[in-house]
Image (tube, rainbow, N blue to C red; front, side, top):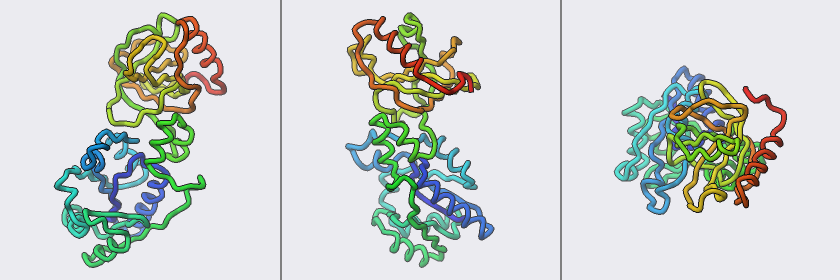
Amino acid sequence: MVVATGFFDGVHIGHRLVIEQLVQAAAAGGDESMVVTFWPHPRNVLQKEARSLRLLTSLSEKKAMLEALGVNRVEVMPFTRDFSTMTTRDYLSRLVSDFGARAVLIGYDNRMGCDAAGADQVAEIAADLGLEVIRTQMVPSGLGYAVSSTKIRERLEAGDVRAASAMLGYDYSLHGVVVAGNRLGRTIGFPTANMQMYEPLKQVPGNGVYYVKVETLGRQFHGMCNVGCRPTVSSGNHRTIETHIFDFDEDIYGLDIKVTFVEKIRDEKKFESLDALRSQLEKDKESWSGAPKVL
């Protein structure tokens, strides 16, 4: 095995360059490529103030993305406080004993183990253990700045889904099940699918109204999604994710739904009446352009 290790949250364009080097290095030597990752996120285990750190990908999404990039095997190590006390040497030794690692990919800014060994120190320890060391170089993102999972979370929280998509290399999505709401949308001509996410720690874009692509019933549609607290009809702070699917009128309660964010339309706001809300929703829908209603 040629191994790369890390959390790889979002599997963004920076991660993809690393994975590309991993797959190529393994193929060149006639070996298999492996990613060893962790769950849950280390910060959610070790830092009390960060235990609700939002994630860009669920574990199943991350594994599927890595495999789609050509990785032969993805292994998940449970991240616990005991695991966090492992030194770099112990961790690299485990990659050899547990997974048959022959070579390890080391990033230019790699930190590893409870001793927080840097890339040069990791390379020395790996070589001492008989592991071939493959050093990756910083590759420009093409965006004019370094890409990180933290920056992507920040842009999503700000509602800038276009910037987030540019850093991810794909449009950001939420996946869940349709649950019952108050059915108010239906009374004003805009029925919505209320989503309960499968992964409760996934990052939700900031409050607002978005153009989205929707997958349900094995088909794809366009629509618009409201993320927020519905200030026109509610005085609470409970956030909901409600999607109006264009030209759609089927019962999907209890069924799977995936909402992919394309562009923010506007901020969420409180309207004086339901009529004013309906009028604004009609304008929002009319401003959608260019795409067929069913993909």
